[in-house]
Length: 112
Image (cartoon, rainbow, N blue to C red; front, side, top):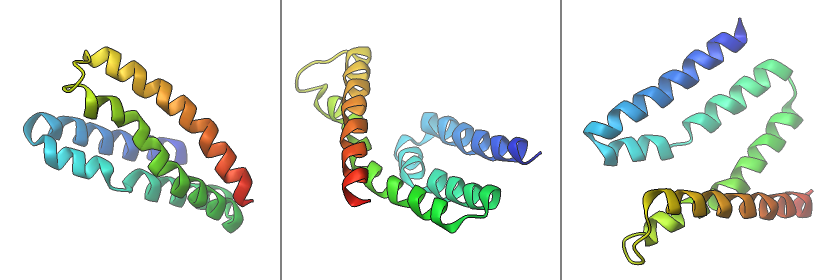
């Protein structure tokens, strides 16, 4: 039952932001950038496992991952300057995220 509640909340947040992006893309982007998912996920993790250490480690991982996740957006920022098609920018962003994952793993291991 808890899994269904978590899915409903996540689907609602994503669906609302997606719907809003067609009407007010700036506001939708701001809402999407809020740490709503992090707040919900950390809360759900703690409720499910009742372990502060796990929740703290999870929050620390998110803290270091946020700036690294910005790598995905770099090709979109440059797409007009270097005339990248959407799917090319998207693919490059995914590649940057994969590289970022390894960077994130290194940082997390360094601080543990």
